[in-house]
Image 1: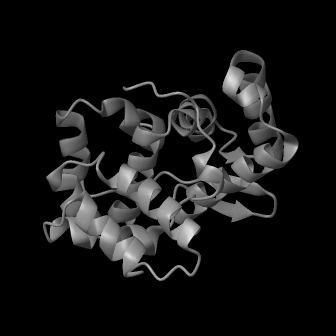
Image 2: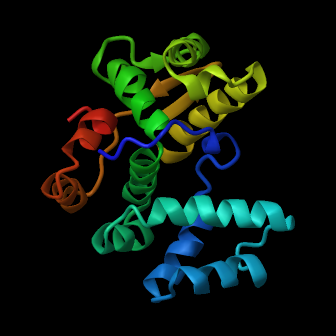
Image 3: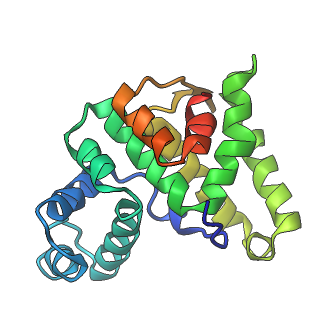
Length: 199
């Protein structure tokens, strides 16, 4: 796995499934980065009023999608909804080191244990530990950390990896298309299956 520095980008752009699918369609139609940027930013294909938000969202979502190979990009756009949403969560984990570490250190433990849910405290403890061990996270204030927690919770629920139950997130063991699971294993990304599906 390519270990990028920790980032707080998720707090502003958590899952964004419908918009990501629109950008994926452009990619599958053969548009390059510049053409996609023009469609999304200049022509407002993604229908976001603020130009700054339009630019930010286009960059973040395109960055996630280029982490997918052609087979996974096609499955994301054309596959069943559960598999499609899983592929987007996988793309987020591939491009966001802090989210991957959360999935590895916190989510997987809940998935494989009898506890089977994540409380607000689980999120708080994760970020507090990272504040003590990482210089980037150490600089984040309470507001950023609250937004990160909200972003992570939204990703888990929107992707189908979790279900809201009052203030907790109950972790869900997802079923995805066997060909997608096999492909992810074949390209050497088995760690993501272990982390997100408990395989």
